[in-house]
Image 1 (cartoon, rainbow, N blue to C red):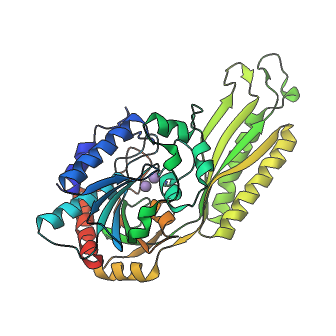
Image 2: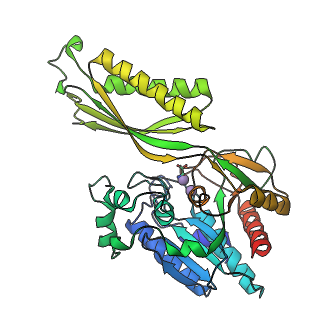
Length: 393
Ligand code: HGY
Ligand code: MN
Ligand code: MN
């Protein structure tokens, strides 16, 4: 089956009323997707394995110097249909096409479904690939809690996995290259009239938790001058984030907030918000975040509140393997472009030669139901991946 047909099989899993998808790590939707992955890979004659972190890897042959392709199947809440699944379905389609042609690889080929790339449940991006590569301390990861207060260890155990198996994975030692195909996030390929692009780099980025604390009080009985309202400090910080990012050409987003007690007739006692900040350079990112923390602290002083900032997920700049990206860009006659989006390929790049292919996204929208790619471009992506697999394997 081609990638478009495989994607159509996923259409009903984890869909939301808005037409998007919510497929968080280890939730019923992603458990259904994992079973689907096993079924499809097995039908292709691949041997499906699962490492101690839940990463699924389907092997065509075994042994060292493998070519790994694939991506992830989890999504952000109310995400689009392609972020992740396009890479997994294109990898399966490419393997299926090559097998149907009777082509034989000279090295093992594996298709990965990395667990929890979005970090939407436990707060750390690329949790499956970070665990597999040792990029995160296993115990710290297993202790991460979701919104219900359940730890990753408890959630994995409830899904019949033994958390004691989590951590650096031996299978990666058998991988020589990783090539991840992904829907473009942002709109660069369309104005350049290219259906497929090759990634040069991933911007450094991170996530910070901001806790604004004040004095809860009665909304009607408390004069405005007598308030210590953390919502004000939070609001000033949101506006400062936009101002600092615009001035510096970087990116800052506060898209998630929790208010306690969250009562219409109470002044809040606490507002918790999460900052997602990204910049073209490490120093740029540091300056952006430091500047925002300073502004938040000044606002807290003015409001008689406090603010506490904790880094939750940090990803350094990624420069994809220059030799591999030039080789693939030449092979595909494709443009090379950076991205502000993080990926499992960005984590594996620390361990082995890694490349990414982007498939044109006509609107550039991602992490929203309107994410799209044309069926022709999706087919062009599979053709490109087939050529890359032939070239590397
Ligand atoms: O947040 C990201 O950049 C990626 O989609 N996880
Ligand atoms: Mn993704
Ligand atoms: Mn994503």
